[in-house]
Amino acid sequence: MTRGILVLNAGSSSIKFALYPAAPASDEDAAAYHGEIEGIGHALHLLVRDARRKSLADRAVRGPATHHRGLSALLEWLSAHAKSMDVAAAGHRVVHGGQNYAQPVRITPAVLRDLELLVPLAPLHQPHNLEAIRALAELHPGIVQVACFDTAFHAGQPGVAATFALPRALTEKGVRRYGFHGLSYEYIASILPAHLGPGADGKVVVAHLGNGASMCAMRNRRSIATTMGLSVLDGLVMGRRCGALDPGVVLYLIDCERMSAAQIAHLLYEESGLLGVSGISDDMRDLLKTDDPRAREAVALFVYRILRELGSLAAALGGLDALVFTGGIGEHSPEIRARVCEQAEWLGLALDAAANAAGGPRISRGDSRVSIWIFPTDEELVVARHTRALM
Image (tube, rainbow, N blue to C red):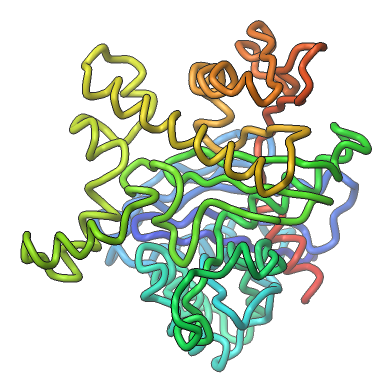
């Protein structure tokens, strides 16, 4: 029987998963199965597809709508239908690794306690990442579990890029910029040489644009600067998150609106961003379909913040050789890519409209000083590779 690696990305309402062979038969390194457990907190539903995207399961799951029950149903399905592959290890996407975890790590009770201390820094993600770890430990005692951190890719940034201008005592306690979407950036960095050749080690900005959005400046395929900070709130406008915000706004909300910390957190994480500005939707596809002026304003602000951060990251790099789009919006919205590139012509970007409409991968004209690309990301594969290395 082949040993398998189960990759899990657990959120508040769903768990995305993929099952990889522990020893891939070829360089292709593809998942044998992947899918999603939906409806956590409401009504569980299991979706499973094979490597060719053929649907293998699409059914309701009975019982309490918890991470534990969802993972139990997944393991039951794999035991019954993936009989040639035994789950020998699990790799988890964990959003925050804090100061202590700059590399993937095998999970022990001590590691789990450390990661629980970071919940206040990633309240939307960390609790659910850890819940899946605890549930799988109960369901599959003794299984090797590995945590792969979204912050790790940025851990080697220069100190000046990671430091807030706060008293040193706070910095020493870990109040600093960490950055996120690191598994996505790590994957993009790994494929750059195949497309950019020697230019892969140049001055590259990657825009991970989705419901959560950030950008990263790379040199020698290493993170030099990024738009997110201590938490996932900073930087770009996102689906429901505010992005960069004057701290004075929070003080105003406390003093004048008499809002509690919990109310402010809900406002900044759940009621802001594209949804807050438009009052219509947090989905870019919905906003691009309507002529409602509030939707147009939300889209314009989304693009404007990308442009501001692109200029900032180019300054941190001392120039720009390539711009890469990834993430749900970055990969699938020609209009957003076009708006960004056309308004950044001063940086040397010249967009090929036909290539952009066709989806790339290269979407810059031959005379563009900066090459422009679209690459789908694969965070699950990165987690699988790290888990394989630690088995």
